[in-house]
Amino acid sequence: MNKQVWKGSVLLGPIPPVLVSCGTLEHPNVFTVAWAGIINTHPPRLSISVRPSRYSHELISKSGEFVVNLPTQSLAKAVDWCGVKSGRTEDKFKAMNLTALPASQVSAPLVGESPVHLECRVFQTIPLGTHDLLLADILAVQVEESLLDEKGRLCLEKANLLAYAHGQYYGLGDQLGTFGWSVKKAEPGKGKKPKDKAIRGGKQNSTTAQKPDEIPTQHKEAHSTNLDSSTSSSSSRKADSFKDKKTTHKHKKPGHPGKKNSFSSRNKKPKGKRPTRG
Image (tube, rainbow, N blue to C red; front, side):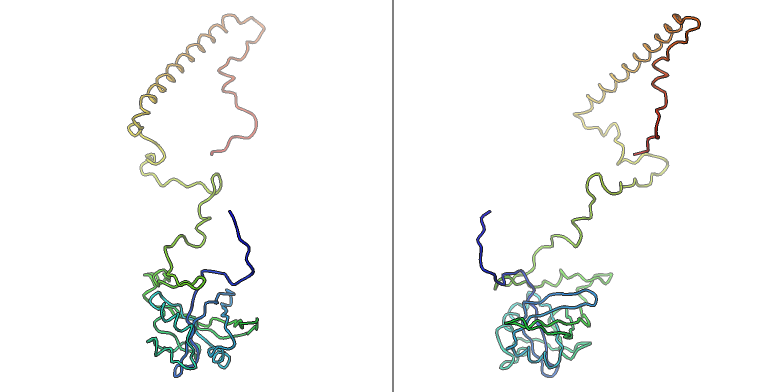
């Protein structure tokens, strides 16, 4: 694997391009932010990175509030356009046919065409250089009902959200897994053994025992041969053992106890702990 070393850059992707709405319901504004992310769980918090020269930075600084709207693939054009045009000279909601809706906790409006909205209030602004990092509490979340299943759980895969990577927009693809799926199955030899399902009438579960007629054809002959040979061998051993017993009694001398035969030796209980069931 051959690698090239480049100087440090902001080459991180994919990342979510979000529509951030600010201002008021009467005078709404919206702009695109690609540098956004969750920064804390309890309390729920996120961050957005904004250039101080932007008109939206001015509006958010005055109100301290904004809304993060997750865009769908059908909003790709609006996402790009709102990222290159300025709200100082353009009414972005009108130009992109977007609908401004009232939020539940903040003065900034929602972008109605978005399926998910995070209402935020800034608690700290950190100047970093070219951008200011705005840290905000997530006060409320609004979700389109069509994204919920019959149990009220959010199915975000239905939203057809956008992704952004190094100047390119992409639609999210196939789901490859869920959180924690890589560790759900126990490693071989570890974890609890699966319990057999209940058996009615004392009959053995078909999944744990193979019926004779279920033995593969190529193994039937070998199975039969092994069964016959083991039966005949067992009979032969019993006969020899019986002869040995008779012979031992005939040659037993008075006053000298006979040696323990192989039968009693085999059935002697071993010392130590009793074996546990596997």
